[in-house]
Length: 122
Image 1 (tube, rainbow, N blue to C red):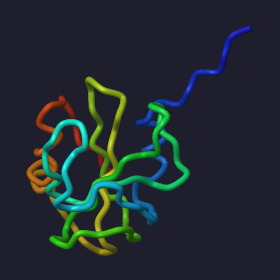
Image 2 (image 1 turned 180 degrees about the horizontal axis):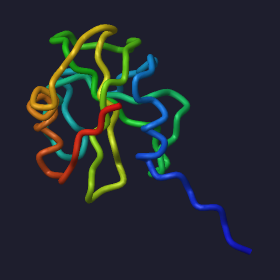
Image 3 (image 1 turned 120 degrees about the horizontal axis):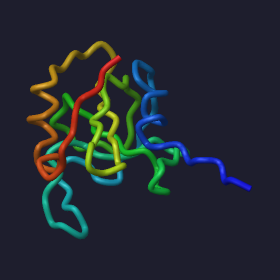
């Protein structure tokens, strides 16, 4: 009997495009990555209770603030789809904020520079 195929992270992430979500930050702005040592230049967290295909909760970047946060509500405006890694990231901003693809790339380059990716919008 064939096992059902697990949903890829991109399929999961697409369900959130354009929606308002709640994010918890396990790596707030200015914190250091525990394994690789780089500093997070934006607030980085996850959507509680939403598990991606890597078995971890779905990752998010929260852009548009210079303040270190613990949690927040925001709108998903894009997905950073990693073409060489099944670990896509939601891009979230405060309600009504607009950010260009170029601004997303610049803000997330501290981590995304190591991956080939495309930005997906609704």
